[in-house]
Image (cartoon, rainbow, N blue to C red; front, side, top):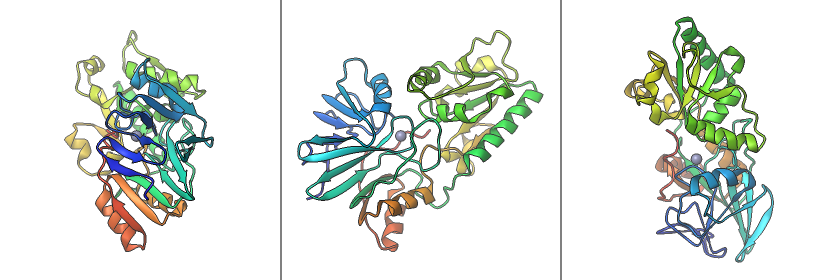
Length: 326
Ligand SMILES: [Zn+2]
């Protein structure tokens, strides 16, 4: 019997009596991370990692019943043993390992293999069945190193400083913005953050993540020369008008696709994702040693085809995950 099955509310583990990242309200939800496509309100109880608890609380509110476990600590739910492994996607992100009757499945959630000082690094979790995302599951998605991205952001920021402009950098406020703050050299100039990012920063700092330099801005000395981090929704908003003729940029894996920057009316694009690129996805599948792979979001068809052509059993499972990378 498969350890996970697709039901109306989400992926259900019958031996354990729980759902993973359900999109409908359920009795018991195991949550991989606090992005909105994974952590939805309305369930009676939630289980997540210690590092992710406060972020999940921010999303679900004070009334939510949340239990937290450390990475590597096993819990018995029903007849299943459940263990969280770091997924490297953002603070608190977990892969969920399920063991029952000698069989092991790993639900990897969203993940990346690249290093990121703001969260625990991805760890391989050997299993019989590996359940993976494929947000960037096409060979065209290859990420530059974080160092290359940092250097190009610095160069853009310096050029804007010389031109007397503000640099307005858009990024997912949950995870990506904090990774950028840890990456960018705060000695280059003042860094301001949108209040939505500051709320998340406070939770990161409380978990011991160092995020230097950023502050909420009132612009008393003007914005020229400053770097301002904001959620993508702030682009072309009334909020953004205060920065005058700022140069605008987005940090996202989608910037790898030619034309995306122009379509979104941005001056620059930086290729930085909190998901694995194509080779990262394949490395994770390989490291799992799994006989079968379920592909549950993103470019499911191409990834399933590639895996089948390379001798691995795989199926595409239609879920509601995967709108988190702006
Ligand atoms: Zn995510």
